[in-house]
Length: 52
Image (cartoon, rainbow, N blue to C red):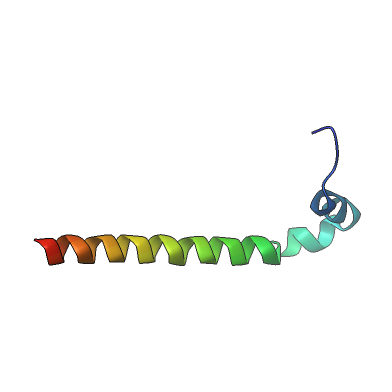
């Protein structure tokens, strides 16, 4: 990458803190992604059963 993002700068400044636990934004994003994926699968399967 030609330029460093603010997140890269934060990780470079404090590597020990990020190594101890994952970044809060990454945790929230993964949780939202997992819940969203589960909801989409649940809704699609419900519609398939309903149409069936």
